Image 1: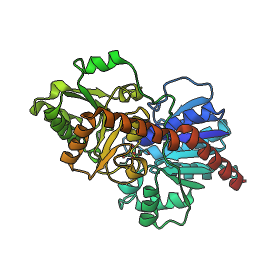
Image 2: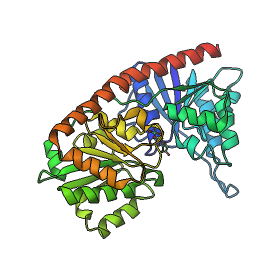
Image 3: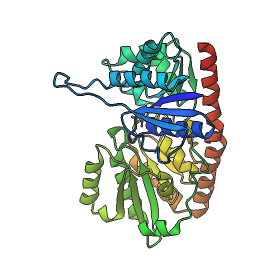
Length: 375
Ligand code: GMT
């Protein structure tokens, strides 16, 4: 198949899923065309079956807001023609699915079906906002197929948009060969030279991630045992979190690593992942950590309980319950047998339910179905 994929190229779960899906599709012999504003961050290796098409947005003094969605639609239609695309797959509805709707109309009478994968805030924050509600409902209805990354997100979408279009749940996935325990002791000791425990957080540092809570949890853990905190990613809340670390006198125990390319290496040396988000429709960072045998301590919100079974392969607490999350971390890090058991269970969950080898065939099957229906 010849597949066009559009996602946000920056740090964020939907971009990661879109990019990893393209890489997995190429590994299965499909031709993949990424159409985006810049090279997606996880697209690290050159691949003869993957082409990147950059969307350039012309600015003009009259435009208060450069019309990216239109430039994207134009590029999608161009690539559909030049590469004879079979379909488009959009990750995050706004504005990608709107552009795909236009591209499909521009490409007529030739067929260009499009699939929308809903990731989270495209429904829970952006889509339900009155500025975008109507257009989000419209593109959900117009998509040739819609998928959601969790049952929670599917239910939420039906509840908010009363859509009649069928929504299929396809959970997020992880490459279990790439994401596994990292035995690199040298790397681990570079952060924790005296055998300290290693806690890790991975996000785009947006308010919804509650990164301040990560620091508060870490402060409580550090009071009980020598430990270090690794923070992967960047975003609007980073400065405030760094300031808090300085204020509390623990900055020398924290490592702000910024945007990393090979997150599996860092996740794979850590002892625990902290994900105290306000909302997660799935919680991809937790899954990636679990595959690396790093148990997550996360908020019991959204689709997270579909991934983490409390007390078995990780721990869950209400968002904002910093003390409880810290207590779970202390319990886990202070008990080697429990830690080993939960770490193994986390890896098993990733292997048995969320491995790319299990999930990617579901997307392939969906693509075939959509192409059949489109005739
Ligand atoms: O976090 C967002 O605002 C959007 C999105 C992204 O691009 O990072 O994240 C969502 O999609 C991820 C991949 O499907 C999910 O793992 C995240 O849980 C989800 N984030 C939220 O629901 C807040």
